[in-house]
Amino acid sequence: MQLTTQLIDDSGFVSPKAVADQFHTTIKEVAAFSGLSQDSVSKRDRVRSKATQKRLRDIVLILNKVKPWCGAPMQAFAWYRSEQLPGFGDLTAEDLVKRGMADAVLDYLSELTEGGFA
Image (tube, rainbow, N blue to C red; front, side, top):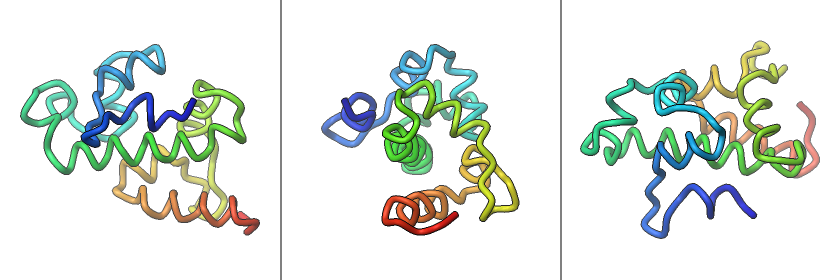
């Protein structure tokens, strides 16, 4: 099953609680690996903000893109947090997302998917 269908509802909303449950972690840890404040992922009005939702959606899209290569959601999550990306000064996808560069990670993954090189 696609992570997008598990973690993004029909209205496009990503629940930080669903993300935490999927990866056996806490809301506080979701804030840490997304680069968002704890309030952004725990207070209802902040969770629904465009900025918070974009960041969470980008993470889900990245994880969904690497899941076939990694084999399972937990391995994709481990990749997101620890695999250094050579085209980005050996920063991880997590580092790049925290810097607001999720689109660059998604473009990089699309390039790899289409047969490009890292």
